[in-house]
Length: 172
Image: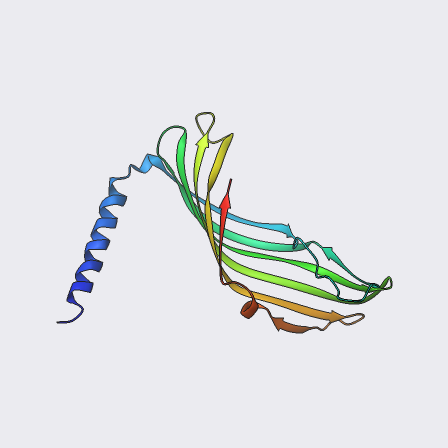
């Protein structure tokens, strides 16, 4: 029957994964969770074209994130740090024309992130340490809401089609 080999490979992969996980001593693995808020801002405001009187001012935005992961101790000083998280990032931008507020933009970026790092502890235990590795992020949403001056209701523009869906980063 077609597909029997594929099913057998899946079963073998599950058995192998269970064997590897059961071979890791429980004392070598530490699970962790995180929940928090942060101040977020983009690095550069948009630049107005051919309008010298226009200015864009970046403002921080309160954002939210949560996640979990584990630390696998390879040696007393070296460990593997694997995480997964949901993160919100963004910024607020004031659009000013000759010192008068012309409108306000609110950017929202939502993503799933999975950093995998090696951690080298300078002392036995947790701190201080040096951390390095990579992070893969998947963008699940990117929007901007424009609020004209004096208005509490805004118009939403979806930016996800113009945003890269997967981002790779190195961490040190």
